[in-house]
Length: 165
Image (cartoon, rainbow, N blue to C red; front, top):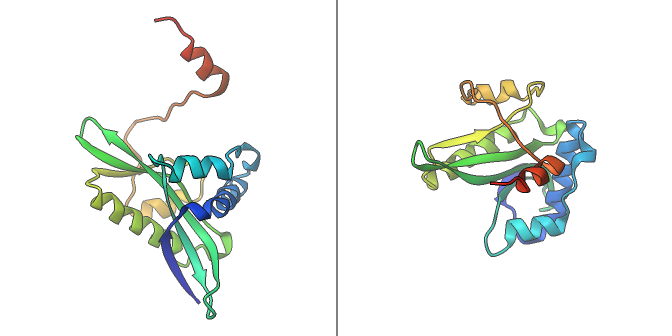
């Protein structure tokens, strides 16, 4: 058996959704996934893709393929650097495949994609209790100084949008 990486295609949206659910379940957050294959089709494979994805597949001797990993990313922009950044939203490798180099291969492929796109950085966010932090650090990723991530969603987002100028 071998491991191959390939860009996700529109026909992969159900597979992408399954891998996203596996990632969420691995983080004890399965109930938070509300996206659907239709959402992924619209936003990843429509006229203006909002994300890109790469699949890691185990290929058997008969050519059968089994998805074992996912890297989902999009581009942001740094006004300070004057260049785009590649932001890794999701990186997932099946638990029984970890430690075999699949995650490193996915990250290396993302780094190559970042360089091809003229990016100044490859970025991602990691929960403080995520055991993968050591993996990222071994690859050379470092905490981004004293920056803290902030977000607004749900009712708070609606409230902010309705705020008077």
